[in-house]
Amino acid sequence: MNTKKYRVVARRWWRQEIRPLLILALVMFSIRSSLADWNDVPTGSMKPTILEGDRVFVNKLAYDLKVPFTTWHITQWSNPQRGDIVVFFSPKDGTRLVKRVIGLPGDTVELRNEQLVINGQPVDYTAPDPEMAAQLSGAERVRSVFATEKLPACPHAVMAIYGVPAMRTFAPTQVPDSHYFMMGDNRDDSFDSRYFGTVARGQIVGRATSVVLSLDKKNYWLPRWSRTGTSLECKAK
Image (cartoon, rainbow, N blue to C red; front, side, top):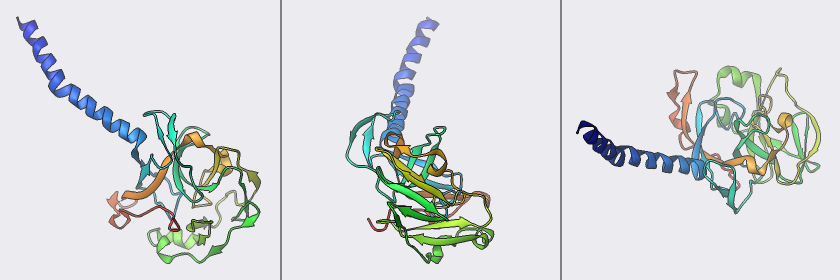
C-alpha cells in the first residue's frame, strides 16, 4: 500500500513539478542557443569600446538561424559586415571571444606600425571622442594613446599601450572565402586573428549589439549604471 501510494505521489510530482520545469529550462536554453544570448567580457581586449565586466547582448539571429546547441545552420540571410562586433569560437581552442570584424572574405589586411591597411588603402585616424576613455583608470589613460579609426562604414575608437610587446606590424594577409579577420579595439592587448588566423563563417555565434549590464571588478563589482544600454552598433548603419 505504501509503495503504491509513493508511486502515485511520485508520478504526480513529476507531472506537476518536475516536467514543467524541465520543459521551461529546455525552452530557455534553446532560446539562448539559437535566438539571443549574452556574453560576459572578462578581458580588456575591446577597450575602450567594451570594458572588463561588461555583459553584452548577442543577437544570434543577426545573420542566420542555427539548430539549438549546435553550429549547424538551418538558414542564412546575412553575413557579418566590416565593423560589426561579433561573438565567435576561437579557431585555436574553441573559447568564445568578442572582437570586431576587420577583414571580409577576399580582403587583404595589413598592419603597418599600428596603421590598418585594407586592400592597399591605409585607414585614416582622427582625434578620439574624449568620453571614450573617461571610464578607464587614470593609469590606463596616461600610458595609452587613443584614436578614432575611420573604418569604412564603421568609425570606432581604438587604443594602443606604450611599452607593451605586441604585433604592431604584419604582412598583407588575404582573407579566404567564408572567413573573417577579427581584431580587438585594444590593439596592443588583444589575442585575435593576428595570432590565430581568420575565423570561419560557421564559427560566428552572432552580433554583439549592446551592453546590458556592467560590473566594475576593480571596485567591489559595483554596477556601472552609465554603461547599461550602451549601443555597440556601428553609428554609420
